[in-house]
Each structure stands twice: as structure tokens, then as C-alpha cells.
Image (cartoon, rainbow over all chains, first blue to last red; front, side):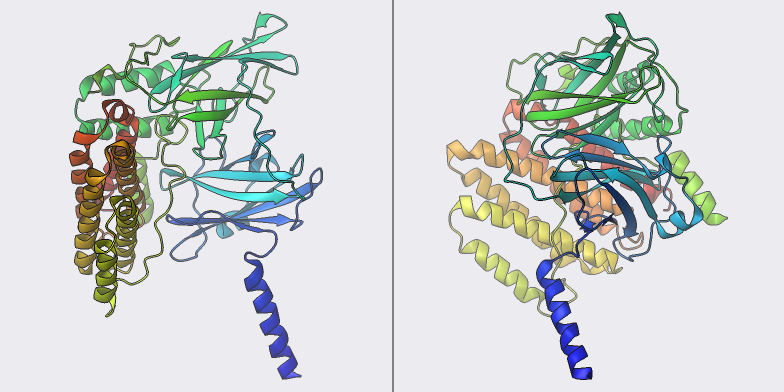
Length: 329
Length: 199
């Protein structure tokens, strides 16, 4: 009997080794001080049916749970779930459904229900703040049987309508250049009239999540306020050397992190500053709350490589000193 | 109580990753370092080094030697980090020296590249150096404070190579590196602040 049990255990072990990760478990990419693992229930998520997603955050070195996460923008773990064909997007948190209790903190385990809208390959990017630093982890989840990936539909239109709200995205410079600061402006209207009833959404007027369409270069950013603009201008004016700028940037980040949430832009425009790191087409999801209702606007932005002579000047809608990289040598 | 005070101090004085503010997000999905494998604490480490150096010597074409040198350099970083994690930072000297030698080899391979490939390879090398500095800087806070000072020397090696490389980088490429360089400097500044605060 014992021999049969040992054999069964060996076979089970071999099968497990052959199949890689257990079904329903998704490890974030290795590296760094933290390891984030996701579990799905059911283990094979089905499109259109609720899946319970559970995350566990542990220290890479000790495998102990990270139980003292900090809250940033009103949430502990921000999760961005995107179909890698960029046809669907969600920004979702444990606290959207239930309060975080002691047992969640102690075990660093958070969960929420999510319904994957269609079969496909999904990426879940999670952002957390620990010891005053923010980190990103990502894992991929396959939903249903998916055919071979098709080319992504690139749609560079600048005007879209979601429910009764029309959105226009403009950029300065008009030709977006990798490695240079870009001002994106989201302008909202309703029935031809400017939207002026924007509400704060998790501590800001807009959450922007973006990926290059190959799934790389995730970014998460927010509105760019006159206060931030003046702080950045002060850094540029005061510090010619990189080391001093780095130090001043430190101070600025601490100030920004500790500043209370404040509604600066009631509409119709929200400026955002972003540096697209590499050329390519990026899928950009902007989540705002006109009349207090969370609404996601999706755009695509083409980013070019810089070549000599390109105009990278920003003509900002923010009333702060004009700047771009004239100081670059 | 002391722990609370320490974290309060971090909150007041230390840096934070500028997540959510859009200007520095280049390295969010940077490729992590490989497994360390052997470290200088192990008897056969010298043999391992010899094997790597021989493979580099026997790879005549710069096209093949460059990626090999970069891969070995990343492995040395992983070894150094593994030693620091085990509180053996003082034993890292052979790995640091090898790291320096592999970067020298990569730099030479860039310069020996055919003219039509040189720009692309120099740009790859520039990004590789920034990524390596970023990785070592962001992991720094998680490393034992007594053992981690060796990381500063490693970063200096990469900084020197980057500065030397700027002479051959295309002007347009160099201009577009501005925010990446800022992000890397900022990441290291964060690490140095931790040392200043005794964290």
C-alpha cells in the first residue's frame, strides 16, 4: 500500500512539474524585493462569468507576507486589468467591494470579483506603495480558448463619445516624441456644452493607464496641476547638475505624496504630462468622473523617435513657465 | 516605538518612486537580473570566471561578443547582489572586477562594430547601463545596510562607462535620454538618502 502511495505521489509530482504553475495561479515576473502572486477562482476563468481574483504579496527573500502596505490615492493595491488586444480595461481594488480587515493585512491577501468580458490574454498590473516607494508587478491570465493573436486594431482618432460625454484628446507637441515630455489634454463636453462638473476619482481628476501596444512600458499617471508645474520649473531653473535635480525631485515627490487630494480641474480640460519612453503606438485609458460617474475614455497615441530638428516645445494650457528641453546639450 | 519613528522619518525625508506622475516610468518593466549561480564564496567560482573569459576571448566577432559581455555583466551584478543579501558584501571584489572587465569588453565590442551597426549597438549599450544602474539602485533599500556599500562602487563603474559612451552616441539619441538619465539618478539618490538616514 505504501509503495502505491509513494508511486502515486511521484506521478503527481511529475505531472505537476510538467505542467509548470498550478492551474489558477499566476506569478508576477520575478525580480526585486517583492513577489506578487494571483489566484483565480475558478482556476480557469470563463468569459462573462464572475472570477474571484486573490492576490498575495510576499517578500522575495523571506517569503513573509508584506503586511504594512500604505494607502495611495485611497486604495492599497491598484489593479489595472487590460485585454492585451486593448479592447477592455478595468481599474479595480479590493476596497471597491469590501473593507480591508486585519486578516487581509496580516496575510497580505486581497481579493475582488471580476468578470472578464471576452476570451483572451489579459494582463493585470498591480501598483502598491510600501515604505514610501511605489512598485509595479504584472502577471498574465488567459481566459478561455483563444485563437492566435490578431494584429491590434490601431485607431488614432482623437474624438470619442462614451454614454453622453464626448472626449477629445490633444497633445503638445502635436507630434509626440519618445523621451520628451508631452502634455496630453483631455477635453470633455456633454450635449455640445463643456463639462464643468468633474469630481475627484480616488484622489485625482483623472487616472491614466497606458501601455505600448506590444504590452510593454506600462505607465500610470494623473492630472498635472499648476502646483506641480511650478515645482518642476523651479527644479529646472535652480539646478543645472543632475545630482542636485535628483535631490530636489526627491523633496518634490515627498511633498506631492503627502499633499491632500484637491479638485483643481472642474472641467472641461484636464492636462496630463507624460514622457513616453520609447517610440510606438500606445493604448491610453483615461478614467475621469464627469458628474461623479467613473468613465473610461480610450485613445491610441503614436509616438515617434526623436530626430534632429523636431519641435518638442510644449504649448501648455497650464499657466506656468514654458519649458522643454532647450537645456539639453 | 523606535520602528514607528524610523518609518515616520522615512515618510518625512526619504524619496518615493514617482509612480503616478508620468515623468519617470521608463524602467517599470525592466528585465530582472538573472539567477546568481556561483558566487565568489564558492570554490569553483574562479573556474566559472575562467570559463566566461575564455568564451569571450574565443568569440572573435564583436557582433557575438557584445551580447555575451552584457549577459556576463548582468550575471556579475546578480552575484554581487546575492553576496550582499547574504551579508558577504566584502567578498564581492572578484565579481566587481569581473563586472568592470565585461563592461570594458562590451565597450570595445561597440567600438569595433561595423560602422553601420555601431550607432545601434552603442544605443543598446547605453540603455543596458542605465537599466543596470536602475536595478541596483531600486533593490538597494532591501539589502542589508552593513553589506550594501559595495553597490556604490558597482554603480560608479556603470556611470563611468556611460559617461565614456556619450562621446559616441548620436546627438539626437542623447537628447532623448534626458528623462531616463534623470530617473536613474533619482533612483540612486533615493538609495543614498536611505544611507544618510541610517536605514
